[in-house]
Image (cartoon, helix red, strand yellow):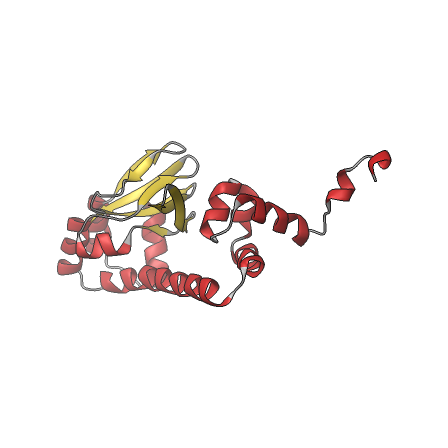
Length: 201
């Protein structure tokens, strides 16, 4: 878990006693693909620092799962409202593929901040990134049509388009799988005619 400490030190310098204290509160957890880190209705009691793999947060709406957020390698994952207020989550956190995360509990965060106020700068760094991502998503949904929401996702998070299941990708931008599939073909300059035999053209 020293790699995470090094990541923290890239944000701000840490005294040795603070490093040791943080390390004592961190734990490493492994989640297989499709396993749940948190289910809707549970309280988000942990911060998840993703070291390998990726996680999505989603909520159920009219029988469908709507993807709310992604967390990739070297990013922080949580349900902000549930963690900060310690109230039941409206979201589920699920591993998209096999994941390794470093976990820091809510209680651990409170203790670290109480003894080492400098840790607030580290939290502020990660929470600012989450805020900016949420603001970008709000812009996407408020100002862009379906195709340009897809284009925004392809430009900002190309790995999501290339590697995640179509159903997950489409639910993130509020479109059907068929629409996203069509946009992918349109964006790459492909057409159905290319895949027809000469006799069918």
